[in-house]
Length: 362
Length: 122
Image (cartoon, rainbow over all chains, first blue to last red; front, side):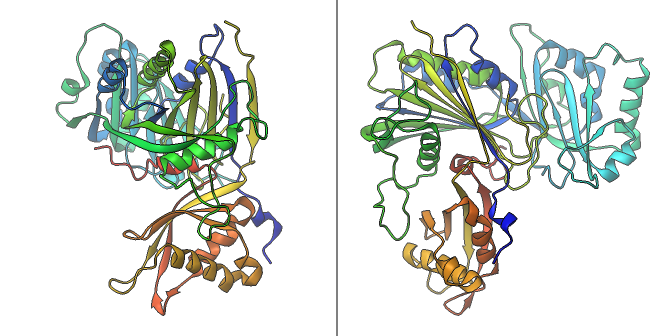
């Protein structure tokens, strides 16, 4: 007999919101903007065989990102870098292939905050002011250091700046492989590619895959009813699981008596002849996701057969933040993801899901 | 255009199911289980560790790929620890050594479709 507490699942949160995409106070775009690091974006459009040209070009222009190998972190604190990139647009950086539950890791947010998540030994060697990680338990083994690079007190001659530079350059040099992306409106400047030409830098394009799903069972949804009604429409949790099944290529037409699996598409449902699924994988910045979301809303500008479509965004499991600056940890899965369902009348549902080591999404 | 009323629901630890992505490791050569045999193996693992009551735990094999011996399993949340422990402690398939590797686990099936630890971005 297992102890009772082992029967309880680890804490996790699913936030479901409902609103209207054109409502003046709608915060759906803010939720996208606040979630800085995304590794995969997928959208599913039922009753769509061929993608409209506007969407095609939006996807084709999903931006470049860069991978810089062995970048010493003090280069991100250098004033040339801050003036050229951090202050002139949205600069995103995230340590690549580091595991937040065992390694040191770092991230630069578009608001100019540099976040270091380091183990106890590194923290003590660095000698920078930080705070214990919220998810490190009674005996603190992990610390979070936040440096605001755009702070007025962080000018090149300031003590603070010199201290940070000394700590990261001489006291305890840290280096990571960094994923970098930079978004700026208009103003021409030097590019990340030329700035980091001395380092090993690679320009990368997101990988895009398309597929058409045939005879897909889709749940029936009522935009004004998150909880669904038996015989009338499916609930938001049912849709969330169904979408997971579709993206994982789970067969939906099981008999409930099947030996292998009892999962079947929630009731009521309709069979759509074809559905279009597109998956974009890379280091994807929120600005591009907002553009795509906007284009997907415009999809319903012309009459369409589809009643709704979905847009799913997966966050990095090893990012030190999930939404805004709220701390994120791995625990068992590090999940932080969100999903939009856009209805024909531009009502939307938004799911935001996080695992154990996370705050409640905004 | 009537603006829809805003509504927010927070579901805390409310997931009915948990999902595991697993891979079975077998020595090279020899028979590979098909989907039904794979499910039977999972039930056997549960029976060995938790007895008949454990074997009655509803587990669904949502996907199974015979080539890579990888699968996605679904289990009710209260049975996660039972299933996980049973898989970990299973050592033999048809008198050959074997091991289950749990690659990813989540209360959200959707999370299993984008694991940043496995994505290759370079």
